[in-house]
Amino acid sequence: MRTFEQTWLNEDGRVWEWDDIVPSAGEDITHVWNRLKTKFGRGPAGFSESTSLVVSSVFGHSDSVPVRWTVYRSEDGEVLGIHACYKDAAGRQLPMLLVVSPGHRRKGIGTLMFNFVRGRFLDENGVDGDAEIAFRNTPMNTAAAGLVNKLVREDYDKRNENA
Image (cartoon, rainbow, N blue to C red):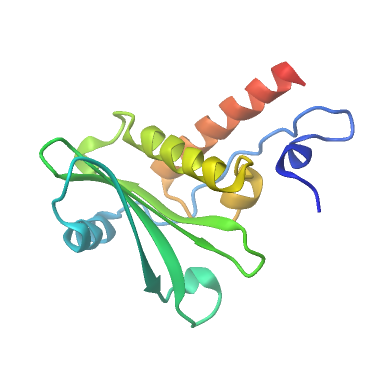
């Protein structure tokens, strides 16, 4: 089995180029945001995590799957961002969603959440997450695709400088 670091390198020892994700999900996520904001409600400032069983077409079957929820709240306890991930049949952690409050977009919250979840993954697994595997088939709207493309390109550029 290849380690994560090996998956970043092509046969020339360079990091693979990133092909931008094209948005494939609907642009209006207000209904999703409102449902999740109600589900998680107010709470302590900063990051909190929980797990619940979820049934979703994202998984490709009708069984319930444990989903790990990461919620980021403001100093006054308002939900500003929500991330959800699950493990596929091969045990790979895959993102299910990353959504930021419509009134708080383009303020760095998505990047903050991405970095938090990525750091937790590294702490738990001893390797960085594989963005190519994680994000390639995840439906995203324009905002999410833009964020992921920006962050992954920065990663690839950084790794190519060091290759």
